[in-house]
Length: 287
Image 1 (tube, helix red, strand yellow):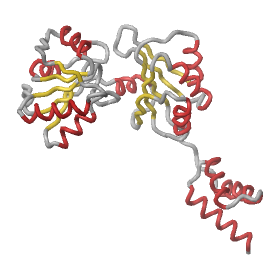
Image 2 (cartoon, one colour; image 1 turned 180 degrees about the vertical axis):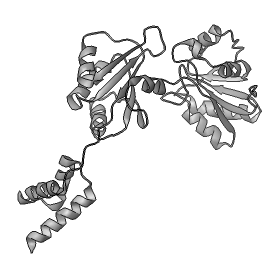
Image 3 (tube, helix red, strand yellow; image 1 turned 120 degrees about the vertical axis):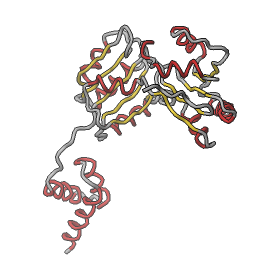
Image 4 (cartoon, helix red, strand yellow; image 1 turned 90 degrees about the horizontal axis):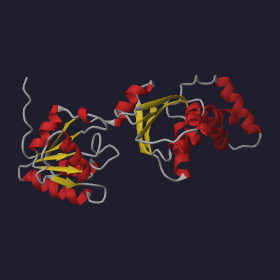
């Protein structure tokens, strides 16, 4: 079946290679050739992509980055309203995924115009697919915070996150991040995916502790995606275990509220049921 050309008066979100230039799909190539305007993060980077595939920029490459995303949205809406075909790309992968683009799409949709996509490479899915970790449910965390307190808060949240966790990290900080994680979740499995689809592609797999040790003894370069195993399911403690923990806490003089908080934190049980049980135990003692 022949492909229908993209209609005019539309914004197309187009995925571009994350490393290997051969990963540009035929449909994406056709859209880049036909577009009236191509908005990109870095015009110099995109000129390299165009040149590799024999596409003429013809003054169509326009910069769109985090500092001008909203003003560029106005221009894009005006172009689409005039019936132009506008393409949005990022330096690598799918626009709007930890890259500029999401605000533009929201503005164009809000203005009542069509937005479609030519899907393709994305580092998130690529890293997940080679990680060896569960892929049925996952959460994307983007880039971790630069401040130690922000990262520590993320690690604490991940203690009980059952889904596989994916995040980006810079080569300068990835070793520090894994060493920090090893203090909190040393036995979790992890895959550090480096330079995906490129000449020096590498995947380091193992426990967080093992991979942190490997990274500490080498210089790390390239684009990094980290895939971390989620919290493993733990069998719920028997009701008598919960009662005993509550009794011990209450006997030390803790209030019902504090006893519940302590047991929920220690045993990972549901707060509502634990509170009801604590009230029952307190009332029994009163009687």
